[in-house]
Image 1 (cartoon, helix red, strand yellow):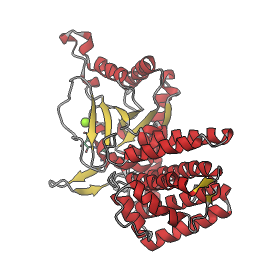
Image 2: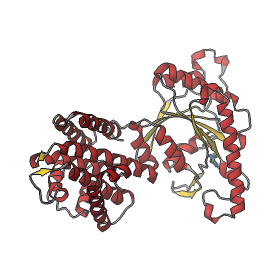
Image 3: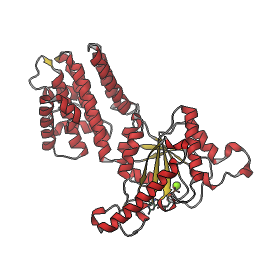
Image 4: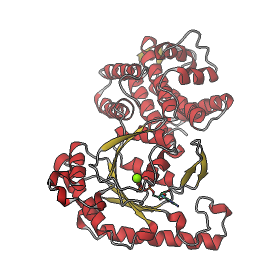
Length: 431
Ligand SMILES: Nc1nc2c(ncn2[C@@H]2O[C@H](COP(=O)(O)OP(=O)(O)O)[C@@H](O)[C@H]2O)c(=O)[nH]1
Ligand SMILES: [Mg+2]
């Protein structure tokens, strides 16, 4: 997981600190805007942390399966028969690319064992104590699609109590997402939601109508609670079905709308939790969005710095920012957090890095590449276009796997269009 001990983040932190120093020379309305962008970059890159998710739902609703489906890997134990009535605890679920912090409320419905007296020992109380201790970023309420019309009142009570405990302890009301699981089992059963193109269209339509009906019903149930109405973000039908061979490889992947669910969740998370979610789920749309946001913010920062004409000696913080952007995009794509991926990318772009093994050295090598001709000063427009172009090429290279040639064309094309029309590029994020 990312943290202060990772090798490259100190360099990125140092780069951002130097950019802030240069900001002192930038006049005020602009400086303020740049400071906001820097705060944004700090939150996304330097302050990143695992998202905290609370899963509410009965045994068998598919809580563990949802965790596995988000990771695309078998990280949580599915379908154990025995209810765990022990105390609920936040626990870290580790995947190859990151960690989610999960509070699984299993056991709440399995009885509060009043004979064991001590009030504070009921599963519900332990859950409430946990959400007071650490604020959830989002609540996911899971119900089997076939059980939405069953009495879920008790679950809604639990949700309302969690919301109120979080509000009391942290002064915020966490967003709530309703998830109808097992949608693959709705009629017609044999119609595969995860292969829509291969289905008989009328049967697919019928199945989708069933999904919509379930979603509507679940939405109404949640909205009937005043305590939850305002927190409800959306209700979604999904299938989390994944099956594994005994060697741990995927036998069958029947997940449906998990990417969409990840996108909804992403938008509800605080910025600090977004990068980890994008890495863990490997949802391309999230990776693209985050990489675009980073590129745009970094380009604006570099432009702002260069608006005050910058002597060549001061270009290095700008190219350092550009190398940081490459490292950031490589990290989003699932690469390791060291300089290897950035080095590989810059080499593919045609840079001769020589002995460079660190961000700083690469930044110096990048000066001639991004600012050809050198000149005695760098203008804001050129710094902006160059940064956006680096971001576009890195996105192509790391997220879409384009060739070195294509990455170079992306760089040239983005730089040309951004220089010709900086406002458009700003608006569309330099595609
Ligand atoms: N077909 C199908 N089965 C699912 C789905 N989600 C979970 N399951 C199955 O439902 C059972 C209970 O799931 P589990 O994740 O252990 O539920 P939990 O008790 O809420 O953690 C397991 O056998 C899962 O394989 C789904 O979306 N579709
Ligand atoms: Mg479970």
